[in-house]
Image 1 (cartoon, rainbow, N blue to C red):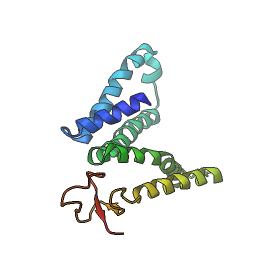
Image 2: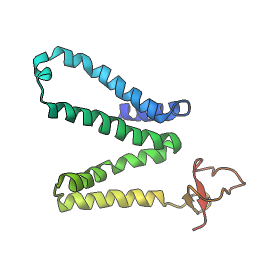
Image 3: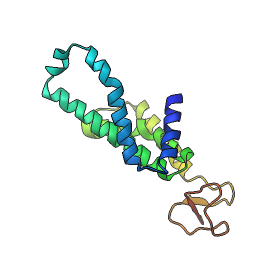
Image 4: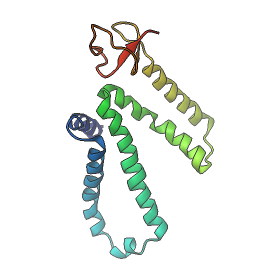
Length: 162
């Protein structure tokens, strides 16, 4: 948890200067460099003789999961307040369950469906929570108020009348 929190805060701070997708690529590259020495200690015939499907699976995990998932997390983190962006990570189990059902034909249990619905409902309620200062619901496309500047509690979000 400490590593995840440190990473999130580092990306948030660095994204003011660098593109979030560049930072995602650097994260992926650093991870590859970190694990490469471990691969060198293994028997080369075990990974050199791997089937094409194994290499394609590894490529998918590196590109789709590594770059895709982290990039799609780092991009909102750069634009939103860290406390709001971190809420999006809670959707991962629900999205994974839905993806497994749609693309792999997996059958989720009733408990998994119920838990996913709770996660999505909680996230939706959090997104629609009224502002503690003005009582209005934050909305990214509305007219700025609170003295003509950004909202003091939601610096990247404007409020709109309910």
